[in-house]
Image 1 (cartoon, rainbow, N blue to C red):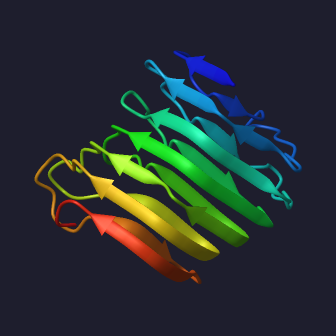
Image 2: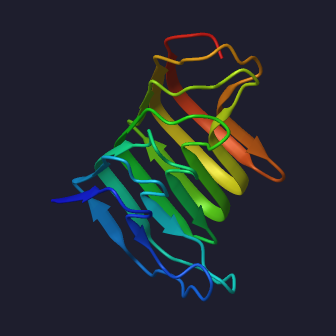
Length: 169
């Protein structure tokens, strides 16, 4: 069990000369209380593969975040399970995953995200193969149109099995 409070990023490698994070698991953690950056930032520079990333049973409060709450790139296998995202606001998405081969998201929830006046993309994927199971979003704030809970662009494939949406997106 762990708690991250205040500060910038919770778990991250140096973004200017970041080695890849190999085979890491984050479990039973709370990321809250005015963190201004990502809960987990795994973006290697130079871009090299990161096998076996597991994040599960976490609460992420993105109320003060100026960037995505989860940002992962160049991963081979990502498993995200039982994560609750609270708060957050456009233009920062709650999650951005790119150039990752096998991404599985299950039993995750977003609540009280503010899409603002122009809309937002809550979970963003680029160049990924995504399988999503049992996701829910509710308590959306703001008046923005054109919002997306799951958004995949450029060479992204998605298989979706069960989404509950409390409001129109």
